[in-house]
Length: 277
Ligand SMILES: C[S@@+](CC[C@H](N)C(=O)[O-])C[C@H]1O[C@@H](n2cnc3c(N)ncnc32)[C@H](O)[C@@H]1O
Image 1 (spheres, protein in one colour):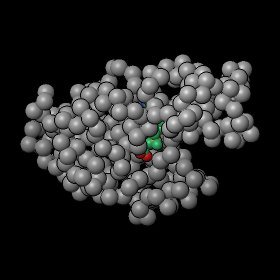
Image 2: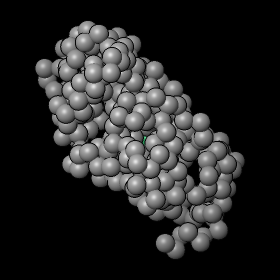
Image 3: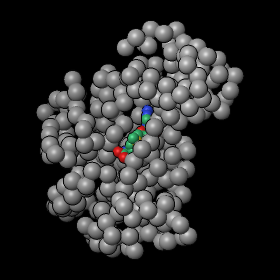
């Protein structure tokens, strides 16, 4: 792409990554260009250099750009087939494993949780499958993201009524949501399972010990090398019997492909390949 070589674009990119505190090379140029151009269009700016000068003198615009790059589109039960496989296949199998090994806790990580719909969908699924007492399991869901504003929305746990009604199966709404005016608030029984935290996937110290990791619709924005590094770290974060759940159009590329084996192609679920330990 021609813009790659534009001096103004390079300056914006450097400034962006100085603030994101991540490697300059992690995100694809095509993705960054789309995001930067979206901001420029909105402001009626046509040259990268002019936009660069703007973000240098206007902290607010820089923050806007940072948020645009960490774009956080999400939904409750995004890609229903994945949630069906999660509820009907993964969770029952995990419960069998846990019982067989006398383990009483379940630890799940939603590794780019955006505004919270994914971890809340996980929590609802657990209650649906395990019942109100979670079959006696101690359940913890760690939900992380790099975008602090998205995390604040997630922690608040309030969503417009129509979004919830379009995305959450009808019979589940009264069980897990409380109406407040034009919005629904998630019930305390969901909230108490989830811990929200800032975490940069391009950072180094990953949490460990997970039975299931959801890392959906975030790697797609990153270059192959950054993805490989992340898969390598996720391998160590996941327990040997664990499940890795990617986005519906994502796949494991390059050297990291050998770290995991496919468990369910349609739902993009993988298990660890223990042979490469
Ligand atoms: C498209 S959303 C995906 C949300 C959810 N997983 C889903 O599939 O619906 C992508 C999220 O990744 C987050 N993100 C982008 N770069 C990140 C990074 N380096 N570390 C952690 N999160 C990041 C963004 O802030 C955004 O909330």
